[in-house]
Length: 148
Image (cartoon, rainbow, N blue to C red; front, side):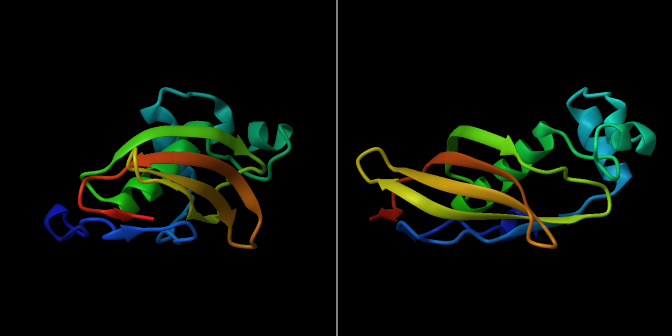
């Protein structure tokens, strides 16, 4: 999808609205690129033996990967005029390992019409349904979006 064809965001927002899912298959190459982009050169992101010594089955993604996917999901839903105000309580519950396809899901949990804010509960899930991470986002929505 090009920037010109990108959806403008929601017209109306209410508690319980479900965000579009974002999925990706994790490869060692992708994990290395993500980790290098935020200068995390830990071998757990590319070395199978080191990753297995920490309890994982394969190299795995870092916290910045999880936060970036949460941000992508929140702002992909909210549109280009929205602003991510906060990303909180981000916790990893399982390894996001090479070989997994992970899917980020979200739901609107709170709406504050006076402040034009939507609270989002976010979760990252492996293809077997295991929740690998969770977090909460606060998104400021532009004028014109009905909140309620």
